[in-house]
Structure formats: C-alpha cells, structure tokens
Image 1 (tube, rainbow, N blue to C red):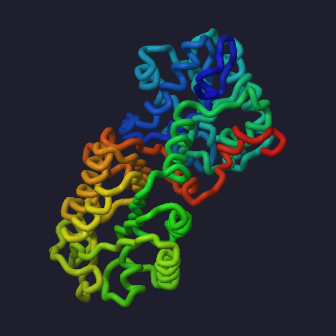
Image 2 (cartoon, rainbow, N blue to C red):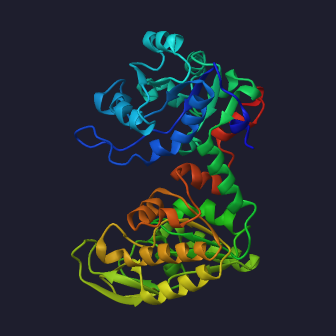
Image 3 (cartoon, rainbow, N blue to C red):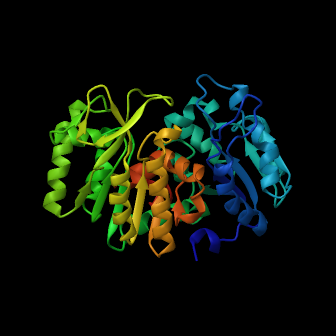
Amino acid sequence: MSAFNSYNFKDQKVLVRVDFNVPLNDKMEITDDSRMKAAIPTIKKIIADGGKVILMSHLGRPKDGPVDKYSLKHLVNHLSELLGGATVLFANDCVGEQAFLTAGMMRNGEVLLLENLRFHKEEEKGDEGFAKKLASLGEVWVNDAFGTAHRAHASTTIMGKFFPPGKRFFGLLMEAEIVNAEKVLNKANKPFVAIIGGAKVSDKILIIENLLERATDIIIGGGMAYTFMKAKGGNIGNSLCEDDRLDTALKILKMAEEKGVQIHLPSDSVIADKFAADANISVAPSNAIPDGWMGLDIGSHACNQFCNIIKDSKTILWNGPMGVFEMEKFQHGTKIIAIAVADATQAGSFSLVGGGDSVAAVNKFGFADKVSYVSTGGGAMLEYFEGKLLPGIAAVTENAHKV
C-alpha cells in the first residue's frame, strides 16, 4: 500500500498542492476539467479519513497581483460538484487573514480552496518566507501537482522544508505518475518503442539521448523529422527545419547506431503548398519534397511502417504528434498512431502517453481510456524522461535538510 493510502489524516489540516490550472472561457466557465478530476481521489481520501483539506493551486500567469480572470473563485462551484456536492470554502488570499481564520475554524471533512498562489510573486521565486507562511496553515503537506513538479516554487518544493518526512506525501495522482513513468523509464519490457513527435529537435534532444540508453526503437515524426531528413542529405522543400541542429541530428543517428537502437524516420509525407487548413496537398518521399512544398503529416507508407513497429512492442512511450493534427487534412498520421498504440495496449503492451499535444490528440480521437496511462504533466514528464530529478519529487522523498 502507498504511503499516502496507509496514513490516517483524521483531525489534521492537510495542505494539498493541486494543479487546477484549467482553461476558462470568456464567461469564466471551465472548458476542460481533467486536471481537477485527476485530483479528486486524493481529496476524497483525506475527507473520508476525517481530515481537513486546504487546497493550493495557481491559475494562468498573472503578472502583477490579483486579476479577476485568474481567480480560483471561478472553480469553487464545479469543485463542489466533482466532490459530490461537498461544501467548498474559499479564501480571498492564500496567506491573508481570511485564509488563517477560515483554516482555524474548519471542521473535519471540509474543503478550503485558497486564492491563486501566483498572485504573490514569492510563489514562483521559491521564497522561503512565503513557503513558511503557507506551511503554517496546516500540519501535513501533500504534493499532488505533477504538472508543476519541475518547478522549484514555494508551494511545490520549498514547503517540504517545514514538514518532517512522516508529514509530507505524494498524493494519489503524483504516485500514479511516478509509478507509470518508472515502468517505462527503468522497468520497460522489450521491445520498447518511443514515439517522439513535435516541431523541434531542440525541444527533444535530452529525452532522445536518455531514451537511447533504454529503448529498442525510436520513431520520429512531426516537424522535427525534417531536420533529420535534411541532415542525411534529403530535400525537404519548405518543411520546418532547424538548420543549427543538423549536426545534433547526425550525432543522435550515430549514437543510436553505436547502441543498436533503431531510429525510424517517416518514409513519406503528406505535403502542402502552404501552412493552412485549405492548402493543396500531395504526397512525396520525406527526403524528396519539392521546393515550395512542406511536410505537414506522415504519409500512408510511414503509417504502415510505424504501425508494424508499434504492433511488435511490449512498452510504448508516446510524446508528440506526427503532424499538424489540429487541421483536418493533416491529422491522419497522428490518428493512425493513436489507433496502433491502443491496439498494442489491447494486445498486452504497456503504453504511456505524455506531453500536451499527444494528450490532446488521444483525447480528441477518443483513445484516452484505451492506453495504459495518460500523464497530466507536459513539461514535468518531459524533464522526468530526460533523467532529471524533479524538485517537486525531491522535496517529498529527500530528507528535509537536503531540500
């Protein structure tokens, strides 16, 4: 049983760092509540024990203090619904008088949502005095915000200093993120296929280098594939390319060869005469794209090529789309990969999908419940797979004086 599950929170004020950074429309309505839903099991466990839950989160990127559109008060009613109608109290400042008065009067089983942490500049600065003030609101600290675990902010990391090891925990979401990431990173059954997409090689260099130590196959799609194609001497027309990363691409290909890792680039591409939804489209080999045309999705041969590799895998990591899937003409490749990952999972493979765009893709195409795990952390997951120790994880696991 996990440390969090085996602890009894009865009669204790529990400070829970959640990631409620959800999108709101012009009417201040939540357009995607998946981050809130992900935190509900942790909150419910503390309530069921008879503990008092004090929730901390940021929302958006306010520049200078309180702004109405970034207020967490807009989340109160929906949070209450997600908790089955439970009363959710709200404090108009995370470290103001109202926060301390309300926390002091809470009864067991109640929930208090504090105002946006980032209304105070000290949060992002990792200010120790601010962290200490927040910490004094409760007796136990739970970090359940994997999406911000790569930031050494006051509420995600520095607060660990003020709670002894037996009084600081990962929440259930954070535990699940770590367990599933570890399954891929350090306990993967082979063949292990990593599907890496997205626009830029520069964003993914570290993750690819780390995966060269672990994966048997790395599939590269999206805009970054054309930097590799050009590095190998291909013609890529007007496709996206980081000319200053051509040597990096060649270095990665050489390292892969030395380590016996197969790197798979798309054999053909869906090409367009402009970057637009109404572009004229055609198909060409990925290394022979005519001038004036650009690759915006993988072609049908590449789809078959990649699907066969995925089908034979035992472990799959997917980070980044295969093309500009937001436009209908260029979503086919990403959708086909989603189907292949879902089918492989059905056949017994373990699959983890992470990173904003690939998560958006599996949600868009309805495959989120057909893969083994969908990570809630974009940047955090990326850094975890780069082999970095995330500050928000170290703050819970390491001795307090080291944090």
